[in-house]
Amino acid sequence: MTTVQPSTRNRGSRRAEILDAAAELFAARGFHGVSIEDIGGAVGTSGPALYRHFSGKEALLSEMLLDVSERLHTSGARRVTEAADAEQALDALLSCQIEFALSHPALITVHDRELGNVPEPARRRIRRLQRLYVEEWVTVLSELYPGRPQAGLRAATHAVFGLLNSTPHSAGELPPAAMAELLRGMARAALAATQG
Amino acid sequence: MTTVQPSTRNRGSRRAEILDAAAELFAARGFHGVSIEDIGGAVGTSGPALYRHFSGKEALLSEMLLDVSERLHTSGARRVTEAADAEQALDALLSCQIEFALSHPALITVHDRELGNVPEPARRRIRRLQRLYVEEWVTVLSELYPGRPQAGLRAATHAVFGLLNSTPHSAGELPPAAMAELLRGMARAALAATQG
DNA sequence: CGCAGATGTTAGTCATTATTAACGTTACCG
DNA sequence: CGGTAACGTTAATAATGACTAACATCTGCG
Image (cartoon, rainbow over all chains, first blue to last red; front, side):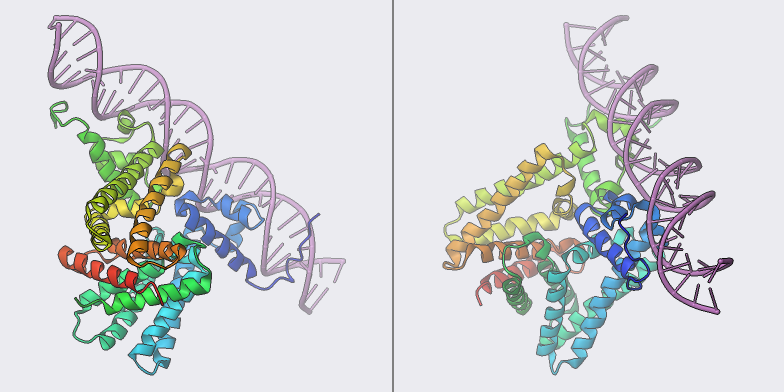
């Protein structure tokens, strides 16, 4: 009855659709709280159809987190090299992170909750990308606030991530643009306060 | 063989022990990623022994989250009423939250991840306590920074929670006292930057 | 002593769930 | 046309896991 033209569809669009749906579900109920059947249902197919696109549930999660880590890291890195000075570099990092957090809250949520469920080959790669991303921030901050110990800057970076990623918890309190400006201002001030 | 004196034990100490172990496990692997068997194993008994202390897995989680919400809310409320002015009240709130986050990272983690798995009678109570706690912050902030819209202050409060609760992610980067001071300074600055 | 209560244990039970198997269908390509 | 690749479907299968039942044990108290 409902005949959707299958092969006219964009190549790989199905994979993306599944990843999106899974991200929402994982964010809402946690990796183990979501069944393959749930994910299938969310994209209109039922259950085992997923195995035509992913080798398993863990592989799906792995790909999702790997993609997020890569996007954050590479877009951050690119914008930093384009920046004229440390001040602008920090602005670029803040923009990237805020834009991502506001437009993909589910991905952000899953990204910092579910690493523990990623199996080992991929886990290491994701960790490495996360570490590199943090180091981008620390490098910029070191240049901007010289003389402050790296350990403190690293902790401050994590704290700012926590601040920026709070977005999913305050869903809809403010319009996105206002939220973005609020977060940027708070993050900048928090980082500047890094030294007592 | 290994005979531990059972009834000489502190009354209710077993419950607390179980709650502690469960908090660690839930924080590490998520509610659905932990089995009753796992929790039992973590306290030296095996599996169904838990049902002597809790009516089920969900009840265990409910009690855990209810307790956290209550402790945050009531200790915050008490210290706020003791404060001489809004400035001191904010300091008190910051102290409570930071102390709690640093000393019970697992509880903090579970508290803001697993509300969705709490069944309905308790869910509502926890939500109410959380809302009240946020309102304590917003009230103090309104007094401290008059003229700023409540919606912005609410969003800022959530953002500061995210900042302070980042503790589990930067485990051991800094000694606790230094971490506490760093977080306090960053949070204060972030809140002060609430207005553009 | 002998019972009560608190706390465990092991062996079911029953549902859920990831994954695989076996089997269509549809569209394009030679 | 005929075949093949992409994509789905509905049954198994096999494991896991929450919860219950039936059965100890041990302490303290009358």
